Image 1 (tube, one colour):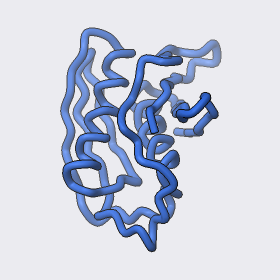
Image 2 (tube, rainbow, N blue to C red; image 1 turned 90 degrees about the vertical axis):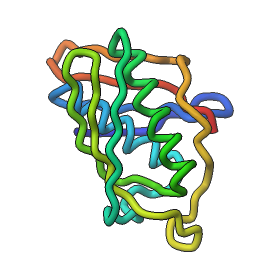
Image 3 (cartoon, helix red, strand yellow; image 1 turned 45 degrees about the vertical axis):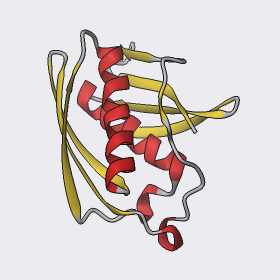
Image 4 (cartoon, helix red, strand yellow; image 1 turned 60 degrees about the vertical axis):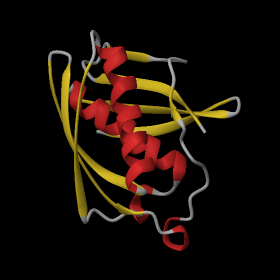
Length: 137
């Protein structure tokens, strides 16, 4: 699994890739954390289970990232590790993280939600999966 952020006007693009669709979704989630703070600074002492479903892979990515935004906001947590399982267009995942600690995490932004801008979920020519979109910060 790999991840990266990319610039997009006033917002931030998040991109994950992996050998499987699930790995690409986990990478996109890690990239979303990276839009907030350094994921390496976030501990993995607490777990949250997330489930969502959508009619296609692109909408599933948006639903997944928005479910994470909801959990971050309501639980006041950041997440650093993700185990994602996708069966058809249903996702079940475990996210590991910890409560936000401003001194430790030094958050640079707050993600408000995933958008449809630059939304792409596809299998690349090399067989790896790509999952990306822009998140509002």
